[in-house]
Length: 456
Image (cartoon, rainbow, N blue to C red; front, side, top):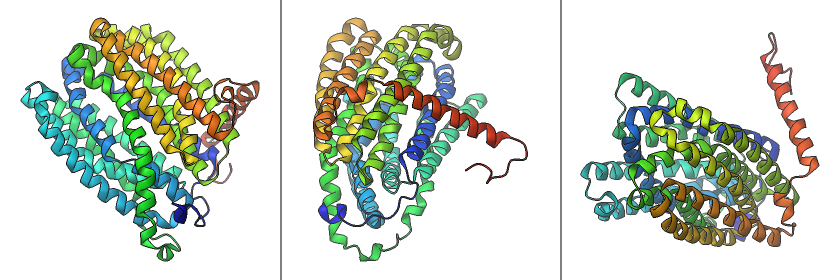
């Protein structure tokens, strides 16, 4: 790995933590916004049972996709940040490996299809289709990892904008025409991200000086780092999705539908935290700054808390009008999952600090421990308490992951644990100042007669 990490790095192409966090955070909000717009459409068009069937078809593909990445997107971010010259070669290896692993997952899914579907042939066909459409999405994920390593935050934000916009337009349009079915929804959900991946085409251009990079010095570091982070990536995805896989056999399809709606809403603070973690991983892989990482964790936690309180406290007044009468039982699960979201936020950001400092294996161990506890608690609570048991499981696993991840990051980065989770007065002042500046810039851009160069 040293051959890659010690190579001279080019200047950042998107540059700076502030720019990275702003673009990643802004684009991260597009996902829950799209969810707010499309979840009611899916709920009304498919009903609770149809919505549950769609989720049951998609979740195994998402889990298999996490397995097939082999941790390569994170490895690309880390290694390309250290040496942008290896971008094309590393990306080619990543896509080839992802394709092979994707096909293996497709075959494995076909082999266990009766177990996953309970003999439902139609659901089985949906699962196989989802699995096949996941393979090109893996290529986009690899390209995104490389773009983050190159500090191409604008391209990452544009990809998110295109993906969410096309998904909203397609699903709403199909609903209006009466053509939205579980099959069509699955196709839209997987094809749209593939189309949006065209924004990463510039990565295929030869980077200045890349011809001087020996090919033999790329594959080994890529696989080594990827394998160390792979287990953690899989475990993290399992924590997020296993509940949706096990919900139907342990409870009911209706509970799965309610849980899907609640998670779609509570993804707002979670996705924000993950966006900040992604930005920090890319920026700190180039130049480590533990105090900055701790401050970013505190600020993200504070913002996530404010958003969760605002949305959670008002949930009884907008869940039913937004999703329909059949989803009134999703109110309490939504409130509980907002608590889980707040507890979860510091974990992935502290984990990004571990990964960017060259300790992805330690992060993986924490994810693995969280997954084991998550499954045990889920199996114990859900058969008795249904969807509420799943929510309490999320609270337990979120708190556990944050405690372990912050503790590990504190030791490795030599930063007190409380510096990650206890907001300071300076953090509040910073949020207020940055917020005012963003509003001022937005208003300046909206002024009539303003030229493109009037605001820096």
